Amino acid sequence: MTRVVVRQLEEPTLEFGTGTDSRVKEGLTAFGPYSLSLGARHPQQVRVGLVGPASPVSKARGFLAMMQDSIPTLGDMQLQRPPFPGFASTFHSQLLVDDSWTYIIPDHQLAEALDLDPPKAFRELLAIWTAGLEQLRVHSDPPPDLILCAIPGEVLKHCRRVRFADAPVKPTAQLSLFDEQPATIEALTGPEALLERDFRRALKASAMRIAAPIQIVTPNLFGPIPGRHDDPASRAWNLGVALFYKAGGAPWRVATPALDTLYIGISFHHRWHRGGHSVNAGLAQAFYPGSEGFALRGGEAEKTPDDLRLRLSEDETARLVLNVLEHYRLRTARDPRRVVVHKTTAFTDGERRGALRALDNVPEVEFVALRTSDFRLLRQGDYPPPRGSLTTIGDRAFLLTTGYQANRRTYKGSHIPVPLDLVADDDVDIERAAQDVMALTKLNWNSAADHMQFPVTLAFAQKVGTIMAEVDEDEEPQTRFSYYI
Image (tube, rainbow, N blue to C red; front, side):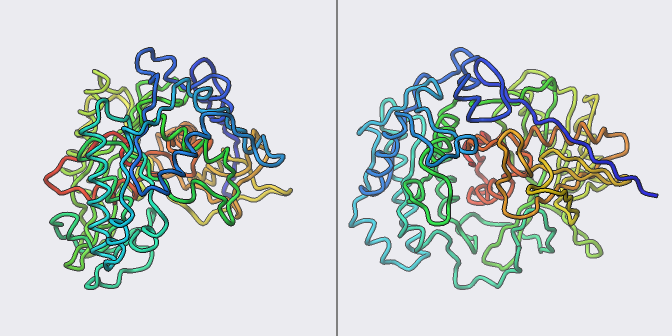
């Protein structure tokens, strides 16, 4: 008879400037950001530039001005949506906005571009915003730490995503992160050859070339937003964390004894060019305690006629993992003692051999595949099972990274939470692997949310991959994770 065991994992603790908490907003409010403990690394100022037409820039400036002071929670929901204490009180850093860091796009220039058909408008508007970024980043003294790009709704409506007329019909769910899709491998010649382009992703790629971290804001920032429950305080929290992080601050880190563990996420993304074929490339996102993480572009995936599953070759896996290890050494001046490799598909023998070859000096190496599953865990009562529920059924393990939050007394989802299926070797401590995943779901510095559904090693894989698709093959993309979120 198959044994079913349900265990409850503890919520990982976060380290802030002078204390710890499992919740992001309460931790920042009480103890300040983690970088307070890092001395000179903590930014005393966050200099914000603005690029966009006059009206959205004015609204963005108004919201930034509102963030200087405390913003109360709307309604009686302080436990679920705490008030925003003000930027300086929260981050112990001064939020600066100045006319010299503002680039206004003339309304007539915007109107002329929007009169073009979407593909031409896409290119023209991308060039207009890029010119503004260059002006502020290259010609300002001192330059802003990051640049807020205010994108009006008409731009998003007209050409947020552009598809060229000669594009073939793509399969549905082609870009699904956790689905394997058959594809034909063929080299790309650059972003101009892509059949579909996304304005936000293309703008982030352009910003990389001039080393300008950006934060894109849309009319949703100013609200009210129909059908959304996030009030101004919640929006201020999310924007504040993103601005502080992209300016070089460290909002929080996971309190963990595993200071010598390196976590690597290997994933695939699908790219379409004018030849009508998709290209699948390996992508590595790496994180270690106390770091902001970094992203590296891998090579092409492979498949065989009798097995259409995407995989990296042994040599390509070794090259990619060795590249990650070299970047880790540059940042820490040491080798990790433990490496955990995450992937959204089962590891092949070739991938294992390649990774182990690159990590031959690392004492502990673990391979953990993470996929969504059809398994569901139910309980009696008004709420679903709590986050951190780990269910083992024989040799299968399912982890709920969403669910009822005891420290918030609520469940934010609208459906039964979907667990992750953890597939690991027999010698891997599955509870330890699950606790790793729980900790890595709390490292989203683009938001003040307490956690995500997926660990950060894989959560942004599609976003990072599609931004890298906008970078020419002969260019080296930025590795800092702040450029991608």
